[in-house]
Image (tube, rainbow, N blue to C red):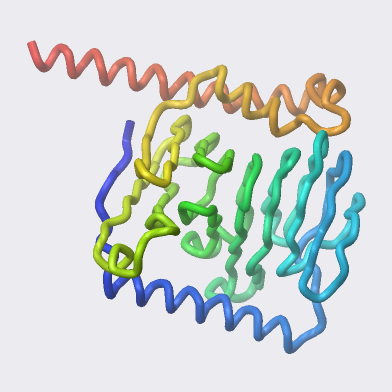
Length: 281
């Protein structure tokens, strides 16, 4: 498995980074407040009950083709799911009992320095396929969870976020692209621990890899199994029309591509293991 794991010191640099990120978010919010709200995407698939809450509006049920705005907090109920198509052709699929917040989104085809996307996953199951933003500026697409920040540089990622653990599944990753996963310190840690303790980071450069994030155990990397890939897709698709979706040829084709990547990684790992055994004799 081609990956890089490293300790990232948390101190003055980390505090500065947090401050810069806060200024970045505040600047984006101020920009949006100064202009009429503009949709950044729309709902292209919806099944079951999906509610959106925005600080500037009352809670409302989303419908097919509903616009999506910055600061939207989108919640799916049981047996519900949706897909959001953003202006840059990025797609976020959200499974049942899940919650997503759109923190920041700027897409300007004529100015690659301005483009950016930042979303938060509060809980649940998600799939993120990046669009033009990562082509224009690979470092400006981020997904944040309770325990980590994931820098996405052009890929197909799965997320399973629960109370005790979080899993990031690299379902697809073009050659030359990478995923950077950085963990936060324990949210209950003291200020002294935050300033002095280390955090972990992993850079993933091939598909078929999963990373489990635990509050007390850092990052744990492994190969995705065929059963895990199938289970993830089945759970993601478990909306109000689950039986129909399972038989959808497009979904089958999508899953077969993911499983193919998983098989290639498993085969590569087996070869590496055999080679390591031969070198040790």
